[in-house]
Image (cartoon, rainbow, N blue to C red; front, side, top):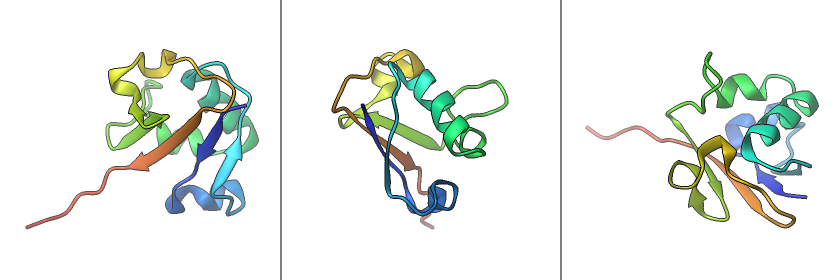
Length: 91
């Protein structure tokens, strides 16, 4: 099962867990399964059209899914999915 690293701002939805295991074959399925286990998380990750929000970066084994197959990126046993919220700032 792939593991998902949960950033601090989303941990209130995962009972403060910093990593969860999700049985899914691709990123789209992973998001749906996570929503069923942790209601509200999909709204944080996806926009109204179901696309990953532009300020959320999803990585599979340190590779940005935008440079892979997007939400169709396949997942395998032992993969690590990282949810990285974009950080804005500066002057």
